[in-house]
Structures are given as C-alpha cells and as structure tokens.
Amino acid sequence: MFTGSIIALTVTLAAGQAEADVRQLYDAGRYQEVVRATDAVAAGANPALQFLAAQSLAKLKDDDGARRAYLGLAESREDSWGAIGRSAVQMMDEQLDEALASADQAVSLGEAVPEAHYQRGMVLMMRRDYDDAANAFAKAVQLAPTFAAAYYYAGLANSRIKRLDLTANYYGMFIRLAPDAPERPQVESILRTIRGR
Image (cartoon, rainbow, N blue to C red; front, top):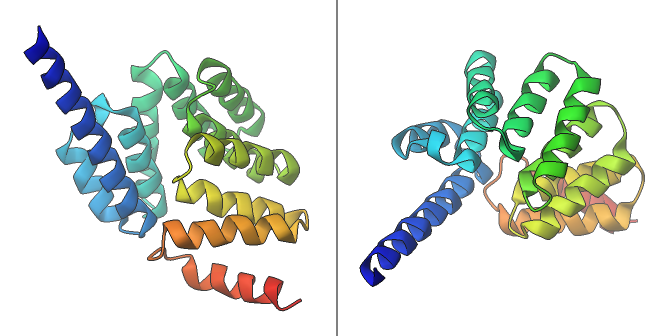
C-alpha cells in the first residue's frame, strides 16, 4: 500500500512538473513546442495541458486545430474544464453571451481553477467589459501566482480603464515571470511610459 502511494505521488509530481515546463514554453512564445510537448504527454488526460495546447494553436493562427482542442476539452469533461472549452469555442464563434454564460459556469463549477477565471476574463475583454475582466484576471493570478498570461491580460485590462498603478504592477510581474515572452518589448515600452509620468 505504501509503495502504491509513492507511485501515485510520483505520477502526480511528474504531471505537475510537465505542466510547469509546458507553461514555461508557452510563456516564452514557443507555441509549436507546446503543441508537440502536449501531444507527447497525452494532454487529454490533463485538461490544463489541453487548454495550453489549444491556446498555443490559436496563437499559431491554427483556428481549426484550436477549435478541435477546445471541443475535445468541452466534450470530454463534465466539469469546470468542459465549460472552459465550451466558452472558448463560443468565443471563437463570437457568441459572446453564450461564451460568458459558459465561463460563469466554469467559475461556479471550479472556483479554484485559475483558468476558469482567465477564460471569463478573456470573454469580458472581447465584450469590452474591462473592469470585470480586470477582476477576473486578478482572481486567476491570486489562485495561480505564476500564471504569466493572466498577469499580462490583467495589465491590459487595467490599462483600458486607466488604472496605471495596477497596470504597472501586473506588467512588471509578467516580465519577471515571462522574461522571454514575445510581448516583452511592447510591455516594457508601456512600463517606460507609465513610469515616465
């Protein structure tokens, strides 16, 4: 029995490390590597990796691949992750009311799932509801303090509502967490402007 517990713990730790490694690739803008890595570790068994794969495919402008990945998440799970997948597909289809309802469902089913709050924030950004989006991203980073993309979008949402102090804080943390991010030059330029005021 003790050996089984050790094996289960080792598998859990390995899965957590794989997720952290793939997130670092994503944060560095190495989206093709994310897709390859998630294929190699059977992302379907890990919804966070499947979500990162879908996000990477979207960044690569592979809308069909992203849609398939989000649909796979939506259809394979009856939990917060399934609602996140549905919301992402609805967002791609510009069905923003439905996407927000699915994101709200994701949050209600998985209050502790940072990606649920992140997805809600993404839908709210598309709806131009920047105040509520900023709050959703703030919740995501509260739950996952190393979630670089959530810091980026928290900074962006706060910049849209002229909360420059919060913009600087979130963008500063984004740069610390994702120093190789493709957004870095743009974010550093914004930070210089804010700090130069």
